Image (cartoon, rainbow, N blue to C red; front, top):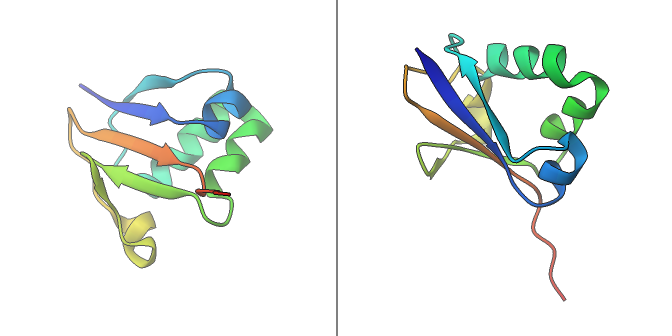
Length: 85
């Protein structure tokens, strides 16, 4: 059983991949620790200011992010800050 993790735009470039599959961690905080173990220092970009997280295509409230529970089959997407011009 796993969760699908996706990285978009500059985060995809930083980590060198568009995503990965991980054994189901208990919450997003644990997921971040697993990603740091897998990607090393590059994973720090996932915790940068302005990075948003979507769980099953719905944005997660930043205040509740670390405690958000995960289940098998969930999709977690990391979205970099939006810039415009």
